[in-house]
Image 1 (cartoon, rainbow, N blue to C red):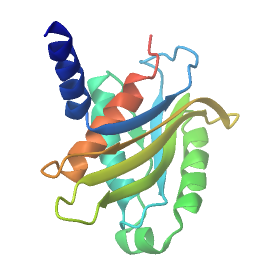
Image 2 (cartoon, helix red, strand yellow):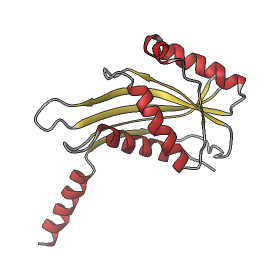
Image 3 (cartoon, helix red, strand yellow):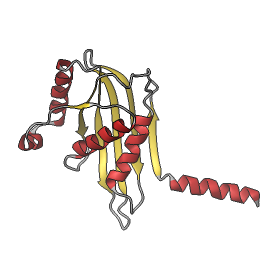
Image 4 (cartoon, rainbow, N blue to C red):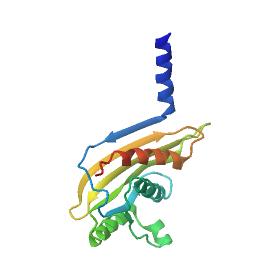
Length: 172
């Protein structure tokens, strides 16, 4: 009887976490109070402006960790829709070098959608990198994906993935 209870608890715990997948690269410890910036997240998803939405969530999660990054200057709205994300990312790294930022967080959005079907559960896939703008060297990288529950919002699923990714950063 005790074994059945234990197995039941394990199954419930597995179901409660949803379907998630994360990679983790251990890197060096990074100073929380250094000068940080956020560069564009390249949008490989089919949802328009998924990168910009993920960036805003990322900034709030970094603030929870005590990191107050500068945001790269946004181009005018009409240019934002026409400009390639990779080009914006390159321009943001140039901006970070001019600002003499110690670290920049950037990355990509691989998936940002509600899956088809009766439940329409949210699905999010994100990758983050911490770069040293002066050299372009990648100091840390991690990626994660999550398929949420049918009543969960897409932003809520993204927030869980980003919170897990940022939680993998080692701050001093």
